[in-house]
Image 1: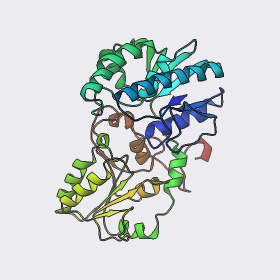
Image 2: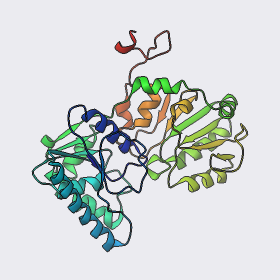
Image 3: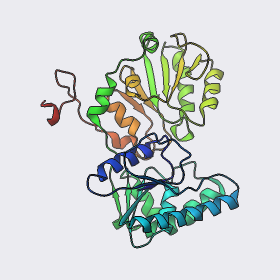
Image 4: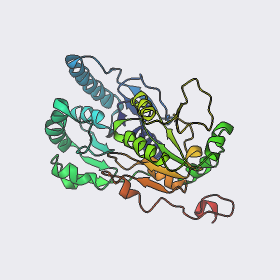
Length: 341
């Protein structure tokens, strides 16, 4: 299995889950481009690095790309690989171009057609040349949402017989149990001060949090409420500045000000257990511009939360009906065969 890095992200979480499950049936080795990112989701399986870093100018990037192809081909040969599964577009290209006798499976985590990060001359090259040319070489392509399949067929020329959809899965009992953990006392005081809207995800263009701040500022004009952001990302400073420009009082977990109920918007950063912040809130808000099959949305529903979501391509509508269970045992645990309820 190959992925560019094992840092923060839904794709990395899915990669981990697949690695853990597949090792019950196969000998699984994980591969990344380099070890620059921390492995936030260790699976316990062997982990190899292609030892090729990113960055640099155009020529350096092209050179590194073909070095990764060469290194992955050598790794496949050394491991006598039967199947190579890649997650995320960069790993897909390297996987396909290093193909030998092994079968190639690509896992597509999100919409390519609606992805605004695929833009400019490089985006045109990816959409018009690389994907149509290379994706046809895969033995199988698995998408996380049924709605991605028409994109693969109509926009990138993939044979529909090579395509199948497997929605992301949710560890329902684990999510529910972790959601029962109490908030730190200072955060409990924030939640007790009024209705709380909570959202979870990378602070990035895909997650579309800037309009959410505009909507919340309008809401605050007539209704006392708090807005909690779980996560971090490249738009952190921009979003904090925009919130303040709308007259909202902002608390930053990485800032010097103490945590009190006196703020309107709370950026709490990455959390080992986001579910303890989600379950006691009033509503989970999900403003994404595009998605695959969103883990955060399904997990919020698993916590029993009412959800307000944009109907963006391609995932939110596919999260209905919500993941089981809806009913609870008398003990408060999820219902199901393993609980006897």
